[in-house]
Image 1 (cartoon, rainbow, N blue to C red):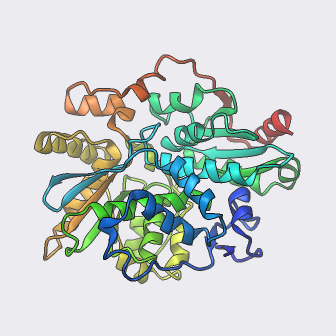
Image 2: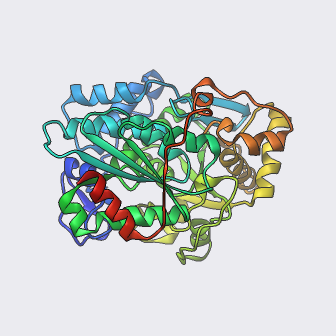
Amino acid sequence: MNYYSTQRQTPAVDLKEAVLKGLPSDNGLFMPEKIEPLPADFFDTIIDKSFHEIAFALADRLTGRTLPPSKLEHIIEQTLMFEAPLVELEENMNILELFHGPTLAFKDFGARFMAQLMSYFVEGKSKKLQILVATSGDTGGAVAHGFLDVPNIQVTVLYPKGKVSFLQEKQFTTLGKNITALEIDGTFDDCQALVKKAFLDAELTEKLFLTSANSINISRLIPQTFYYVNAYKQLKDKSKDTVFVVPSGNFGNITAGVLAKKMGLPVKFIAATNRNKIVPDYLATGQYQPLPSVQTISNAMDVGNPSNFARLYEIYDKDVDKMRADIKGFFYDDEQTKSAITEVRKRYNYTIDPHGAVGYLAFKDYIKNCTKPINGIILETAHPAKFLNTVEEVIGEKIKIPTALQQYAEREKLSIPMSIDFEPFKAFLIEQYA
């Protein structure tokens, strides 16, 4: 199977080129030429399937069956070394905990899969693979850990100064080795713009073997389909309609869910955002209008121009009504988010992070217009300890910091300050890696 650009100005490429190149030269995003549905009885017998079996079935189709089965099985084994359990808050309301990986965030799934796949593809290459990744929080840590010490690969993480939580920042700025962190004096959108511009720069692409580890890379989305289907398996009553509530920033996570739906998963979606409500506004008005990002306490969603919207737009044939049939959009401010954290703690004795809290609010509003009970699955995308100051201040008590996170607190920060100007960034890359 080949992968085409959403801009349709460049030839389609195979999986290897799509993954290693990351971004087409026409500034589009790679998409599979076809999305092959799973067998008709797949979901009827899903209770008998393991997480690994579900993942293999999805990945085999989304990679166009181009990988040797034994290699794909190995990649999945290295990816799924932790669970994604469904926790019931009350009947019809569930939390999908996606923070049981090494960096306590859902992006561990995508980063580990991508690292294994890229490692396979660069075997025997003479030039070192240079990965550029912009982060608003969890992507940096997940990618850094996924690729740490992977031979023949160098990672450069760009993040906005002062806009990433303390422990999130420490997870990717203290590693050294083949991980470099650049502290950009700007927003996440500025970081993302630098990465995209680098891929379109002829001199850089000639001198360096560049690719991206953001969700603009198709290999990040493939493994994120796994936990949607595995969550559906865990539901007690599959006769009810099911909706996934997805805290959304760059919209890669919800795009993966939609890919799973196109393969047969019988669900709908809620896109829950903070004040960066570009997509909810699009769903309401039919007009897509990117705006400068606004800083909030749910910082991973502080994105003013979501890259993966291009993929959603493509999947739904550029038709807002088709998208509206599958996705509803809601948005909330910081005060509402804080109130939700408090409410979940008091009502359910469960500590939720700011992103999950936005999802909780969206589900509550969504069910006001439902005429029958539904299964709600709220994605808890990161451990609340990653937002320690915010969560502890809101709930008025200390929360336990997992050892996997606490170990970074005292480590020395190694990041390099940089402006939002492209030329110094380009010069840095050439000087360091060419």
